[in-house]
Amino acid sequence: MVSLMNPELAKKLINKYGIELQMIVAIEEASEFQKELCKFIREQHVYPNMGIKVRLTLLAEEIADLELMLYQIKQYFGEGFQKMIDDFKVKKTLSISKKVND
Image (cartoon, rainbow, N blue to C red; front, side, top):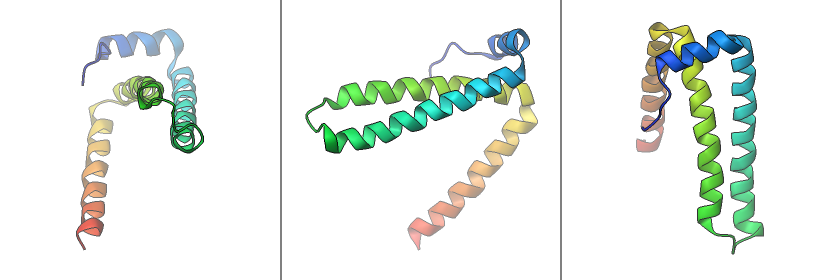
């Protein structure tokens, strides 16, 4: 994954704006991603001639925004928090893998 976001930049952003404000921005970005994903699905049916590249570009931008905000939140809470996330990912992946393979 290519990104110029790094721990130092994340820390500077959190120090400048505060973690609460960055969490609010993360919520906003999650909402914008959700909206764009809904539009992506809807527009496939309503505007079938609209280029897929346009829809994918809009969706990709919202994913990038959300990932940048999630990165900042993960950096704020530290390595232990990332480990919790990773543990949940493993647990949930095993669970859905079992459902798919049964």
